[in-house]
Image (cartoon, rainbow, N blue to C red):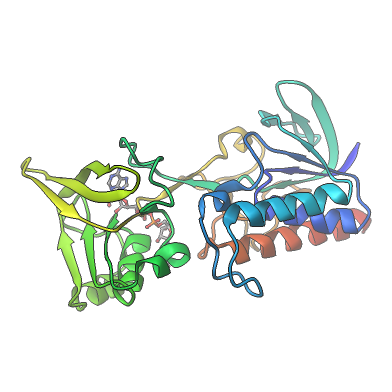
Length: 297
Ligand code: NAP
């Protein structure tokens, strides 16, 4: 019997483990891939308070070593089901907990083009606020038509020399205010009814091929490509026990409790406005302290 089982060893899950171990609880974390979550793809984190400059990998490794040194147990097994009595099932075994924190994160939706994975950190990014500063006075493209893409284009227009905003339709999904702001920026050029069909470069991104819906192709040179075509959370396996939105995000009225007693949520996998490292670790701390308080009550 564990006090707390945490599903997901990203910043939110590992911070929850840190707080739970420091409160002397018996903690087990499950991770289906490697520790760190999405942050390991960020070459340099420059917006974490108090740490001016650290790679995502180093940050995740520091946090991992911190929780391991406190005696936290971690199993690299995917959770395939949680039973009503808080039994956590993996392909290898069954584990029982007094409370569970789900911190499974979300993955950025990929274009699924050749070179996309290869150029992450070498011209391709999924986070303008994390990586935008590397493109001072350069030319970048943003792909997508939701709030994230619009906000990214506006954010980048204040850093880069030129921003192309590429969207597959001629209407945006995002809010009118952002659309207006985008249209008012002199250095944002809209390329609508178009998709990116090729990512071109040798060791790093050099240009992209864009194909319009009437099949006209053009190649534009860019230093950076920010892909903002939405995210996909991984909560399919929890649908039997807690409520998730139609997009798959975990529903939580207060940002910590789920719809099932003693199951809590932390990080990008819940419905929230700002998905950042700072908000993920904050969620992790709140989830662990809430779980501990309610366990002791
Ligand atoms: P989103 O709203 O799901 O928008 C994704 C965009 O990417 C859509 O325009 C979609 O096109 C496009 N897209 C999807 N798959 C594509 C593909 N394979 N190729 C090309 N384009 C593709 O995602 P988001 O912008 O990340 O926002 C997620 C949620 O967070 C939303 O609810 C959003 O309102 C919220 N959010 C809020 C704020 C804020 O309030 N300040 C900021 C950021 C995000 P279609 O439109 O054609 O489907």
